[in-house]
Amino acid sequence: DVKVTQSSRYLVKRTGEKVFLECVQDMDHENMFWYRQDPGLGLRLIYFSYDVKMKEKGDIPEGYSVSREKKERFSLILESASTNQTSMYLCASRVQGISNQPQHFGDGTRLSIL
Amino acid sequence: AQTVTQSQPEMSVQEAETVTLSCTYDTSESDYYLFWYKQPPSRQMILVIRQEAYKQQNATENRFSVNFQKAAKSFSLKISDSQLGDAAMYFCAYRSRRGGGADGLTFGKGTHLIIQP
Image (tube, rainbow over all chains, first blue to last red; front, side, top):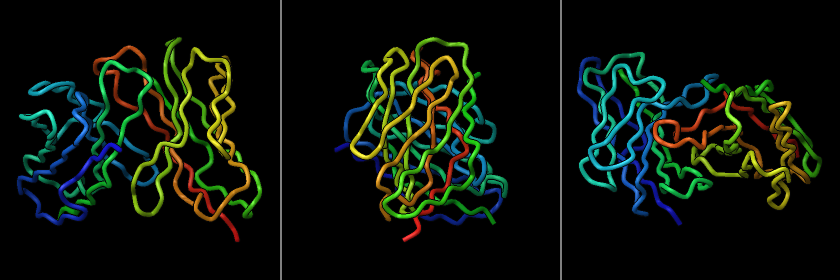
């Protein structure tokens, strides 16, 4: 089974802090994703990576950046956290090239910015 | 851009009965994938069922089946013999087959399914 692990289940940070959310997958997947989940809005794609050091903006990239230095790890960075970034963050991965394969998700990080 | 609409914020069903969750989507593409994911209180997103747009046959997975109407851009999920463990948020999702940045999923807002014992 694919395992996608997010380093923190809950995280509390202060406004203006630089925040790192970490995600690791163990199935050698090329594609990795960061989503944000808010009540009544569903999940929205923040950033996507299809290879080491490669990234693409999703639907809501403002205020976020990402880093993928190793294939198995994809980090989401809040450069200067703000209260409107309080949310649930979900990481996912997927194999590239086999197009009908689904994304596999981590358990999510509930981030609170005070 | 694609959009996915789930018009039922909440549904309730008696245990052992059948329930149908609605999903419609808007796209100009002809080839794509559709998914239903389940998210229980544990927060783990679990794939329930998937459908390739080029397949006319509706997908089934045990008690879960879909009614895929491509022309109507409709993708409903039917859960038969509902069980208490089916209680969760259910998300409908779309993925383009074009690849690249289009590989991300577009989700609906979700339907909260309640199972009454």
